[in-house]
Image 1: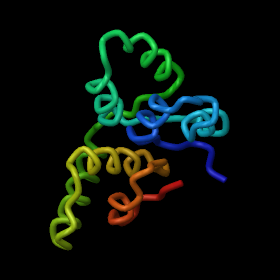
Image 2: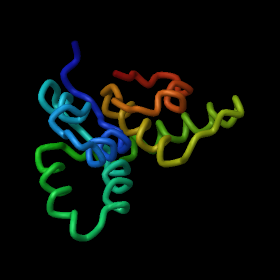
Image 3: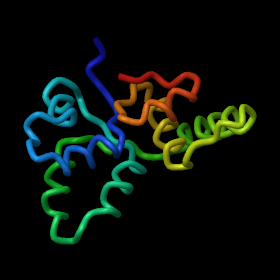
Image 4: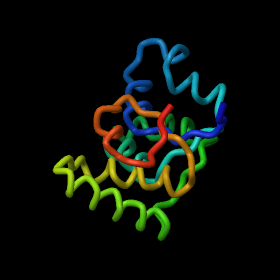
Length: 126
């Protein structure tokens, strides 16, 4: 079993909204895997956060490696976009950038939004 994973924003948000955070998918992933988050997914989470919540969000992200959207990810995103556009199956640009980051770093993606991400060739998911 692979131990590293890129965690999508939706998993962080569902964790935040949960009444029992000890039993969320995020908690499970953090306990059993090396956690990464794309810079784009972290941005998505933090733009929706209230200023009063920021300290707690930064504490959550403290031990999670943020993967940059670098040149390798740019190339992967370009290829994903072209593939999806050709198939008339485009998804949100932020999801393309998150998937491209996971592909560029050769990690699987953990997401609750499988419907969109399953369209992307070469993306492994957990």
